[in-house]
Image (tube, rainbow, N blue to C red; front, side):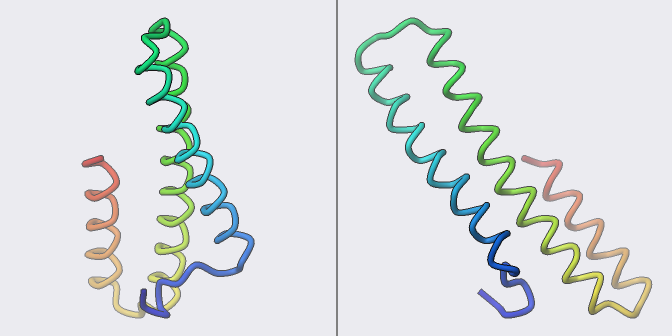
Length: 93
């Protein structure tokens, strides 16, 4: 990863890692629940939990990216292009 887009301060990086670890753990639970043919609603709740954790991690990284890009951009056209690219990427998910 480039220095320009690195995740700092370390508190942000820790929040992202915690969210990703929780998502991974929850995915394991979901696999077990599906394998055991558990009721659908609790499985759906777990899936939504994972989606929320991933969105949270993604938003933290996106926020950091925008902050770093805005800090280094002096040209209005470049600023606009970068923001449009970021928004399009976020909306396509």
